[in-house]
View 1 (tube, one colour):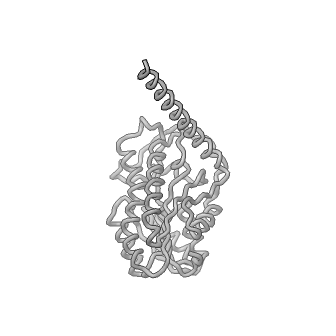
View 2: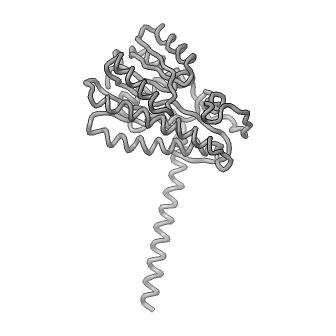
View 3: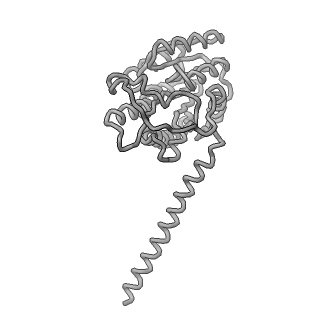
Length: 284
């Protein structure tokens, strides 16, 4: 998708932070927008900002954990624009605290938004994308925490983002023969308040409550949403399997996989030792 001007971008979680920055960057590129967020008031404000940049926009209050609401977003997108060229499944939440202390509803909420929300976007839009003439690209927001795992007080979040990475990679290979691109965006630290997403937790998932989790400390080199958004669009244009906007975090990934490779080497050694012991036993 070389040219974005005139194309249609659908963005979930567009009411604040990085989602808002993505919406405004798409508007600067001249894209028509379908914007969704759980917070109807916030998403209308962002829509107003985008209209001021001279593009067509509509906004909807959407709970991505509800399949029928995401289906309604797809129906309206195609009714108004006739296609969806860039789907940014961005809505996400984070629950803080040790993995073992997370409640059942913490797990339900996190996976309902972070994983099922992405799946609902795929189910609603891919069948329609198959029938459109224009290009189609999907970007699913995962995280650096979907590539590595650390004792970082985000165990539930990390599990959900690993699931997004796995699903996105399979989806990419499934849809590639049909000409639909799929990318997995794995950002690192962001200067947003996603770690405080408990403040807008819906009542069906327990609602807001005071929760004093241990401090995560200062994130290493957090990036501003406005600096990240152009990188996401550039990666989408190139249909990258992984969109990497935080290359300075490479050592986190290499260190993690070095430990995995060491375990593979240990596995090979153990297999060889057991095979050797078995041969010696047979020769006795």
